[in-house]
Each structure stands twice: as structure tokens, then as C-alpha cells.
Length: 146
Length: 146
DNA sequence: GCTTGTTCCATGCAGACGCATCGACCACCC
DNA sequence: GGGTGGTCGATGCGTCTGCATGGAACAAGC
Image (cartoon, rainbow over all chains, first blue to last red; front, side, top):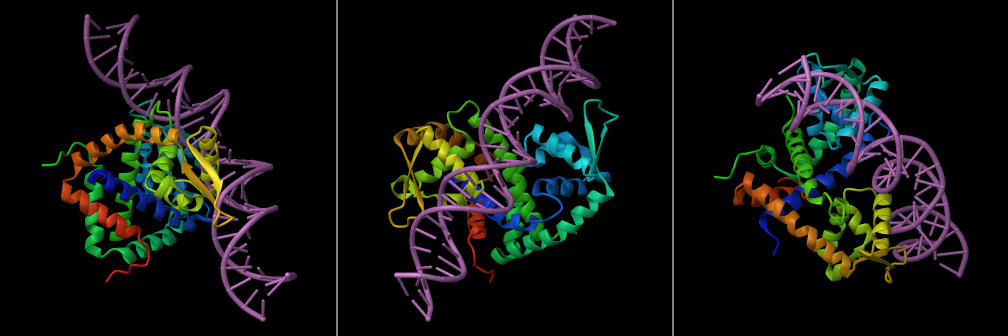
């Protein structure tokens, strides 16, 4: 008797949990943790390999203070650099270093392999595309159902 | 040049992170945390409102030791009870108490409302159904793509 | 310019988490 | 029945996380 919407959310959540635990294997003994990889990967997709902390915060599975400290540690490890945003004195820009980019690539190779194997093993290509479409639409705000 | 499978996984992950942060609001000042609710909700769906710790562990966004301690705290709070599994001396059965069931219902009411509102606001009913189908298929193991 | 309200990031602190490991128990084999 | 390998859950330990808060920088109104 559970509502359709609740079923959908529960399925999404369970799928995420299940795959996440499988993918954790990719990071055993890796030079960066999953959280760190997440930051590095996200930066890879940003122009110039840098963004404001604020924008990272929305994408990462971490609270604002948690991200603040994670980035602090990553800077200490030479994976990223922090600097004041010249256009907004409140903001902090986080940028990839060469070392960070290398680390992302190194781990990313095997991780991407796992993802492709897992997804392709369970869903057809059109299904993968549809899943991506639905999840993207779900995340996008303010687009009410017709 | 990112692979289709990687796109799909990334979308799924981002949707989960985004909605999760929104839903966190439902638990501000609530008598149970989100993790605790997750356990209570899962137990609700189990026969007799009880399962083995092992089975919970697969559904919860927490490591095995983490769950072990969470349940320990929840027992101290009177939300669940633990007892040895008579059929497998290694296992521990976790069961809902009345207090736990009440807490789940209380928080669940508003939380379910948020879920329905958020999902329905972004996806049509058929889309929600398709999302549930895809996520369920994705999670299920060993069903190779035809 | 001053005040008020808001945004962005950092930090003190307590509690929670994960990794590695251990002890207890089951299952299978001989 | 004794031995071996595997599974289940608990605990020591160090680290990480979140909550609440603080201070600095923008924005708007007057």
C-alpha cells in the first residue's frame, strides 16, 4: 500500500547503497578515499579544474563543515589548492593540482571500469540512458509535472 | 567522452545526494536520526518487525560495525530489542518495539509527504514507475543484459 | 556612510564512523 | 568427534563527521 513515489525513492536509495558498497572495493588501498575522489572528479568537470567550495558542497555527500575540512586535508596532501575568490571575498576557490589530477586519473581508470561493468551487466544501453534522463530530471528543481 | 554507464551512475548519485539533503530537513528536531529512521522503516517491512542484523546491514548506508553500534544505541533508547537468533547462534535478531513503531510512524508521516511531493513535482507517475523498475533491476544481481 | 540581513567559509566540541581484529558459532569433511 | 574454513556480530582505536556557532564579506535600504 506504499505510495508509488515512496517506492521509487526507496528503489533509488537501495540501488545507490548497494552499488556504493560494491564500488568501495575500488578504493581499498587507493591513494585517495571515495570522498576525496568525488571532489577530484567533480573538479575535473569544472572549467580550469576549479570551483567555489559552495558549488562543490551541493554535489558531495558531505555537510558544509565536513567538506571544508576534507578540502583542508586534501590541500595538505597536495591534491588541491585553495585561494580566495577575487570576485567574492567570502568565497574560496578550490583548484586541482597536477598531483590531484594524476590521482583522479589513476583511481578513475579502475573505478570507471567497475561502473561500466556493473551498469552494463544489469541494464541495456537504452535503459541506462533512460535512467540518466529520469535522475537528471528528478534532480532539476522547479520543473513541475505537466 | 564519458561513457553512458558513467553518466547514468553519476546522475543517480547526484539525484540521491540532492534529495537526501532536502529530506534531511524532515529530521531536524525529530526524535530519531535519518539512519535510525532507516532501520525502523526497514524493520517495518519485515515479517514480525524483525530481522537479522546481517540483512539490515545490506540495506543501510552504514558499515557493519557502524550498524552494530547504531542498533546498540537504539536499544538503549528503547526503539528496538536485540536477541540471539535461536536458529543461528551467530546471528542477532533486531525487533521493533512499540516505541520504535510509534517513532517510525510519527516521522514517517511527514517524511513520506516530502517524498511524494518531491517525486511527484519532478516526475510523472509513469516516470516514477519506470525509475523504480530500473533501480530495482539495477540492484538485482546476476541478471545479465539480454 | 551606517545599519540590517544574508551568504560563505572556518572552527570548537562531542559524538559517530570505518578499519582491523577478535571471539563465538555454524558447516563440511574426513 | 576433531579439524578447517567461513560467517556473524562486537569492540579498540584513531579519524572523520555533523551541529552549532563565529567572523568576514557582500547587498540593500535609508
